[in-house]
Amino acid sequence: MSEIALLCGLTGSGKSTWAAERAKGGAMVFSSDHYMIRLFGHHMPREVFDARMASCMELILEHANRLAVLGVDVVIEGAAWRRAERQLAAQRLAASGADLTLYWFEVPLDELHRRLARRNAALPPDTFEITDAMLTEFAGWFEPPTADEGWRIVRVG
Figure: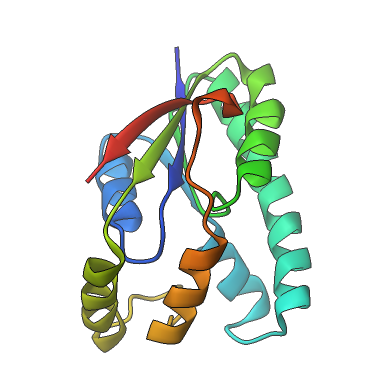
């Protein structure tokens, strides 16, 4: 049976590195940042970003379902900071019959700020630059996962 892995954690927590390792093993990785940047660029108002992100995630979930039915492991990196987003993804992906696993990359905020400085100094392609102020703001939006969201939760980090 295939697995659909949803990666949950703030910027700098190790999600992209983990996803790259899974890709080497044959998993299909979908990064919402890659889609957003390639389709829409780096800068846009928050409300525009949110609407575009929702559209990208709809497509990612559709493709993830189809690939899982075909027996391909899938990794989804992005849009998992809020409980409602994770629950919606679990509901949409349940039709695939795949094992649904949420990998929670839990890293202290002070360590994330240190990692962010290194990341921004050599920003990978198709990656948004995130400032310290943005990371602090994002941390306030983050809702830790709970067992009743429809995912098997694995803590990483």
